[in-house]
Image 1 (cartoon, helix red, strand yellow):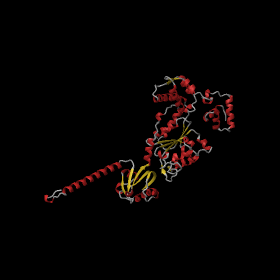
Image 2: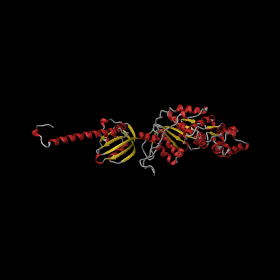
Image 3: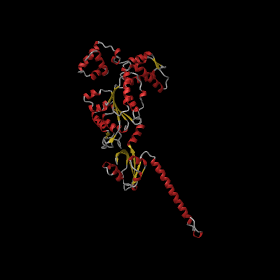
Image 4: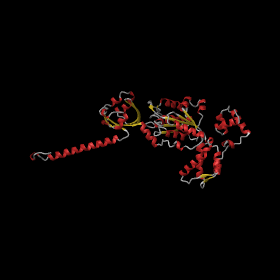
Length: 463
């Protein structure tokens, strides 16, 4: 401030100081605003602020992207203008206009032609309006899947085996990896259906998306629907606040592996079929259709055709899941792969336990080759782990397996080691007659698999 000295008073310096202080405060506010804007624009969540009149006062770039809006036309626009035309947004608008405090509530928003599946958090600011945090459900599901380990770790390179029939199955699995068709993996327990499912996912274009596995046999029948489809808050007694995301939503854009699909109860089969046909899921207790894009790989150790014939599995669901069907051969039908698997598992197990590499005597290998392996590859792996832990030194003898794999009944041995006497064959015939040729029931009473019983019937001309 400059002037003739006659006009300068003791107030002049105070005016200059006050002006300088005001300029400094404006500069500080501008810096603070830029920091806040940079911070909110770097967030992975959408931030939206609305005043008491329902007009938008702030929106970050992420929220613009989620809602598919242009920043130039948003600030000052009424929230009712953007969302009010669609009656399905009523819940969203009620939360804002009534100033409700909600945390991570699931909503399906409709903005223009865009449908947004999201989690909403609303914080009332009283006379200032409210602040909204909008999280895309897909992004949230990817984060959850990453942290809880929903990733496929196995690839086709990790699968061991040279058996011709087994390699044919693997070649088909590789070929179908690039399609989105549903796959049904069939075979006895322990044959590696879960490994092949992971390999198909990792070979597919969905390899960078979630791989979610659920064992249908491990869940109580009352919980299968809630685990698969999720539920809204208050859907049933004990439902947690805010509801729960189902496995279909977690696997969106990825692969959902339904292990032991034959154990899904009939009422859940109906819901599952509807989801597969409509490509959308409705949470328990909810009303909104949530679009999903999921590839289904199912697995079972049951004969689903027999289950369909007995009315325990829906025929339409069987055909829907089994667009492509693969039968995984049991270990006893690919015995030449046993030495390869033994070598692979011994190296893996010894490395895991920090032990020197162990090897087996020819007699031990011969014993394993002649054992019937009712538990298939899983049983072989567990037996070898026990041998590594319990055997002193680095040589595993056959007597270890003779002690630990000593079968209780002769039916667990291979056909060339079973004493199929006339009495035993007569026993099979009599049981078949008593059970009216119910193969599953007869095999269970004999303590053998259905496949074994079929082979014995063919061998001894039992019709």
